[in-house]
Length: 507
Image (tube, rainbow, N blue to C red; front, top):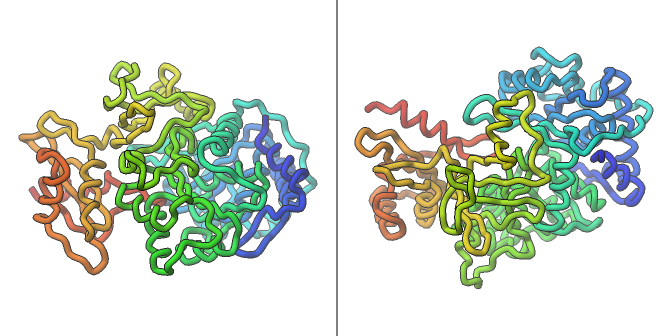
């Protein structure tokens, strides 16, 4: 089993179908893309002496070459190490060193930064003479790999310490693909995917099911997420799918509202990285109704734990609409899901515990980290660190990361519940809730609030809103009004940064 076979198959079965585009300009068909990947595989092997199991780091902005390189690595039996292009130099250095990458391929804007770091034997800049020589090699013979050989070394965000390299195998990613077709959406050869989110993470993973279907891979000329550009590309390309974080969906909605309509060619918005807040979901449904799907996954089980498939996404007329919209959906058909107690045993519906999952998408383990592997995969289950509750119908409601639960006066308070209440205020744009150490109560609830542009909101208003919607003991004891929330490169709020802000305040 080698993922490169997917492109080889597409190169034959969809030979003349458009495969890759930069903006609105088609670059090649599937026959040419398969040939290009084979040549790059030959160049990586022959020019640098790489062999099966060697690591190649991709420190790149979104670009058409990303698609070529992923399949070139697999074609040669290599392990791809896609790296978030927005990291700092020290973070790049850690991943390059930890992975033992022998070669690092970089986009031009990152060449100087990576060139000054230790580790790789060679740094190849896209478009350089070295790159052209690698790409001009004779196509390599496709290497046979075992299903459990590592294909993608996926480094976690490292918000609680050093990032860990999740070993994602060929089997894991094949399972992810079948999960997509069964529990997210269908794909036709005339469809497309627009890679506005980082290809080093979720959007890049979705290259695979679209290659299986012979669909078009579209890379924005900006190399990232620009709402106006994305809108235009989804107007220009047929059956366009976009993978997006909830914060991106919010910006897409605002842009579509300003233009008065959703993009004509938009088929699906698959969002992940956390459930969408109910108020944001309502706005998205009003504009993108029938086009939305949600997935919940982790790097350790890529894109594949639970889903709200496009064909079964909740509609406002449903009796339990809000609960369904606020949930993370039901388990993918290719995994087993459990909400577990302290003994890792299953809890009955309605009880809160840690989300555990097992099945073919779950990683082999962490790279060079046996202790973390044993802890995270104990008992054969992936321990996600997320707190959730299953209802009687199998829908998973995520409460929070276990480390984010606030314990005040001996009672558990889940920040997401408080955030949902505050977001019901029409002049609140964003909110994040954390716990602050308190000598009497253990912790007290603090809310960081971003008001809508040009609007003002008071603590008294928010307090009254909370008292109407949640128990008194859950309401924030203090509010911090800020211009923006600190976020990582994928749009997730950095609660660690908020805790540091609170810690730095005078007593």
